[in-house]
Image 1 (tube, rainbow, N blue to C red):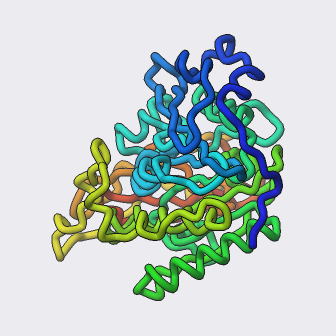
Image 2: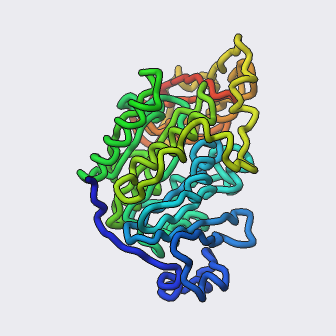
Length: 393
């Protein structure tokens, strides 16, 4: 049996009295929640960044039996719908023990727009540097919840446009990444074995296990990295493949993984993740977007074609000078059968793509060769990449 590092059972009252919520203004409980301990077996709510465009709701469920505190996060990236839609269901589960703290729609402006980045233009999952303060107000609010509840386990739900095969450059879908403890590894392996044996029909879509990258490796600023390095919690990053797979199936996979990661103490009934039950769930405001409706895809759908233009022209064919700035332009990329949804760039040659828009400026600050890779993804999830190399003497 996998044992959490700490077993505890917290109440909203205990937390609210130890943290000055009013002065921070980032996380607010209702008056009734501050004054009364929540009923065992019930779910209460709190609000992050109330009255702002980033306002979103958190949920707290306190089971009748003592047990660990599990924090569930969804919707950090708005164009990864299975994660936040699964989280919206999971926060209402009848858990067997401990406490469930959930923020299903953690980046509401990104979810509303269906984009990776929110209204602030930043990738929320790069705003949690280790041993530093979170970089945006929304990241600070989420981290305040971590500090208030001190979870034993944190699970962050995501999706990818490619399948993980040991190299994150091509994608990280169908994988469970974890913080590396023996307990975390055992829990991930158990979840992977269960979902692969009972829910995955295509061997190419089987889940894999992966560990977190080191503190000096890209990508940096992930929530799960900060949690695992600054707290005693085990942390898990769950990724499903969001291309060419029905949304309802991906929601089920996310739910099964969470159910299995927590099965030692939650004992959630398997029926909550049965595919036949998905359509019966209350998914108000969480219906699949048009770009997730596989039935609408034409059989002859064309993928996009990535193209990089540079200013100065043909910069990849010339020797550049130190401190020279090059503008990269992907706007001439062909969308295929539908419009391009994301333009992602890897300028660090470390396998990390960031959604930076159709144009990007890079400055040459050292001698040598510098690969630059572009990945474009259209609204139906099909993608293409192109790479150029910038060089100096």
